[in-house]
Length: 327
Ligand code: TYM
Image (cartoon, rainbow, N blue to C red; front, side, top):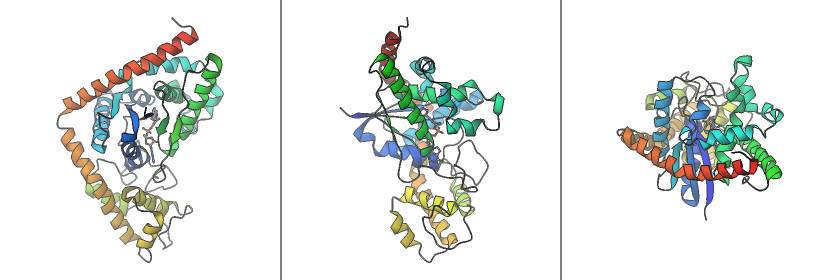
């Protein structure tokens, strides 16, 4: 029996190179060795305001991106979270076993709610419990995600352990799997901040569906520093970030990359990085354009995915309900 992988992406904003290197690339790379479940987490997306028309489009866009990146519907179950109601149901039950104090420690909530204060939705606060439900419904072994989601996988383990200790072995404890390169790609203009798909100001991110001109200009305009050497040095976040993107898209090791740019200037390095990013994204963008010519095909794949996911999720939900004494 293959081990199970579960992961997901929110259908909001524009997916960027960080989402690719932090998550998607690794889903595809290990796809053959696992039993994979990949979700488009639309219920997570509505924890902040969304335009209904755009949300619907984004769900299909993300599905197109999954398939164009190499997710194979024969090897992986791909579906939309709201199509399988067990996710929301389990989240309610797990809410009742999750202390407020645990949730209050989530750094992503603190960051996302900072400027909204009292207006922030209960859903945003509760978001990690829904994520725990996603993962626990499928007896997940591994959760491949970027660095920012590690804390959420850890709280998933805590919630599972708590439930198991009350009701006996019910949930498998999942492990976060974080990639070596590209686990936390930073904003190109403010490299001390994470690259964010909800930030649509030009020059900050490298959107997966951007034109070559846009990609080139964002890389050429990326913040560096007043030093000269092109080295992986965490104290120089701008250059470090660009080098890490280089590492992620080429697969070269760090020593090789440093040797390649020894004695060279930032201009030359950035030009080469832009070409490498474009080479990396072009075949993906071509597949995306081909696939999305027939949107009905994507809808069919998503429906088939939901049909496969539903019985697995419902079985676990029923086990939980019966243990808790519901119904
Ligand atoms: P989301 O939609 O914000 O991001 C999707 C994936 O991309 C990774 N990521 C990054 N990796 C590297 N550098 C970055 N700058 C960067 N930004 C984002 C994220 O770590 C993630 O892997 N809560 C999740 C979605 C989710 C989920 C799940 C994931 C819901 N349920 C169950 C795994 C398992 C989220 O908002 O990801």
